[in-house]
Image (cartoon, rainbow, N blue to C red; front, top):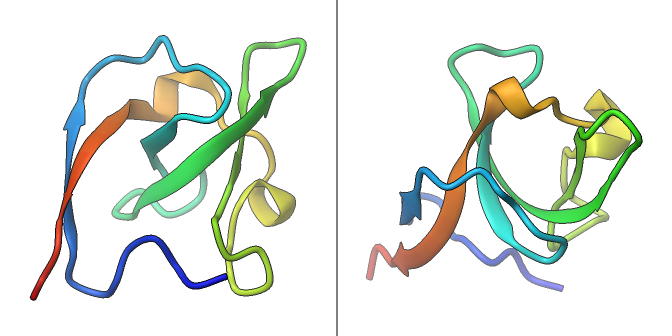
Length: 85
């Protein structure tokens, strides 16, 4: 599967953090403070952390490598994509 976003694409996101399974969301990376992630919510664990996955699992860095993402790193829900071309 190809990535949903191409390099340079921008997204518009609402600062809503009542995420649902299946939402495409923006979160801060758990280990790299200057990096934001755009991923899909796959599940929530018992502590309320979100399991985030990329739409291209064979190429994606996601919760499989950095673990589930706590709510204090959630930024918002993606509403639209602004393609580069």
